[in-house]
Structure formats: C-alpha cells, structure tokens
Image (tube, rainbow, N blue to C red):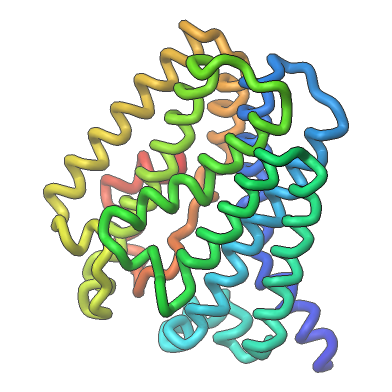
Amino acid sequence: MQIRCTINGSIRLTRFKEYLAFVIVTTFLGATAASNGSFGWKLIGVLFANWLAVAFAFMINDVEDAEDDALTPHKCQRNPVAAGDLSPFTARLMSFGVAVGSALVYSTLGKTTFLLGMITLLISFLYSWKPVRLKNIAFVDFFVYGFMLSGLQFLTGYFTFDPAPFMHWIFPFLFVFCISCYGEMFNEMRDLDGDLKAGLKHTAAVLGPRVTARLMGAVMVLAVISGIITAFVIRLVGLLGLMACSCPFADLYPPCGHANSSEQEWNRPTGVLSKAT
C-alpha cells in the first residue's frame, strides 16, 4: 500500500498533463524559426530536455509550497507532499534528479543550448525557493514566468539548430513570451484577494487591479502584433501550428504558488483570455 501511494504521489508530483502540450508547441516553434522545418534527431533531444526542465519547475514548486498548500483543501489534494503521500526529502530528491537528467540532455545539444538550459533550471529553482522566491517579487515575477514557461523553451529549440537572422525569431519569441506573461498576471489577478491576505507582494498586489489590467492589455497587444508579424510578414508556418495547438489545451498554464482561488474567481470576465495561456 505504501509503495503504491509513493508511486501515485510521484506521478502527481510531475504534473505532466499540465505542460506536455505547450512544451511541444513552444519548442517546435523555436526549431521552425531556426531551421525552417528541417529537423533532425536534435529535435527529440531538445524536446525531452525541455519537458524535464519544465517538470522540474512544477515539481520544485510543489515541494517549496507544500506547507502553504496543506492549508488549502483543493491544493492539498493536488500536492502529494502537502497531502503526505511523499516526504519532502523524497520529493526534493526526485525533483533534482529530473533537473540533472535535463542538464545531461542539454549538454549534448551545443554550448548555447546548454547555457540556456542551465538558465532555465536555475530560474525554475529560484522562482519557488523560499529564501529567494522570485514569484513574490513585483515585476520580476511575470518576467521570469514568461521566460521559464515558454520563452526559454522557444530559445533552446531555436539555438539547437542553425540560427536564422535575429528578425526571424524575435517576433515569434515575443509572441509566446508575452502570452505567458499575460497568463501569470491573470493568475495573480484571479488570486489577488487571497494573496493579499497571505502578504504576497507580486505585481498585481503592488500595482492593484486597475493598473495590472492595463498592463495585461498592453502585453496582449504586443503579443497580437508579434503574432501578426510572425504569421504574415515573416510567414513562419510554425506560428499557425502554435495557435491551432493552443486552443484544445486552454488550461495549461496553472497558477504557481498563489494563495486560495475560488471557482467564482475562475469565472471572472478576464478569465477568457487567460485560458489561452
């Protein structure tokens, strides 16, 4: 029974259903920007490395947030460490094991990709690690989130192959980066009441709902402009695939470490666009 509980908890810790699809999308888009559709064995390698890197981000987040999640019933059920199905030591060991696996795969894909991969793993750790907790620093939080959960997957996919000119990748990069930043700010807006009670100081808590909503609008406008330039000026076919693949997986950017959120908050009008992230 204990072994079964540990196995089940280990699978839940990975939260793989929440990122498998969007990592494929962002990695493929980066590879398409670089090689214009000419792929080799490296594509499988960078995709696997990115999967492991994002898995590490989700896993270490649950380890660091276990004490807080234990106070919230629905988060306690989702977080196996908070639920007591995995010990913090075991969960942390698994998390860093996944990070090491990701680093090893990145190391086979070239110096630039390896460097970007190490940056991904580092900020994924610092995003949740309590002594630093980047997700609780205003303005840094959504910027790091944008890199951690889309931008760096795009860049590793891009630099794994022969790089194309700067203008060929900057706009698709901005597209995925801005959408991810928007998603993080929506998460903060949705959970704002609970986060304020918990004493968190992320962007939405510092700026307030009205200014944050304006910032979200500006970020989304930049995303739309970048998407249009990518699709119709650069004519990068991969973007169309990104848009098509994003629709069926509308809930793939869950909140990372915010306080309580209610079903009523999920149904606020601003939720419509965030579900695209």
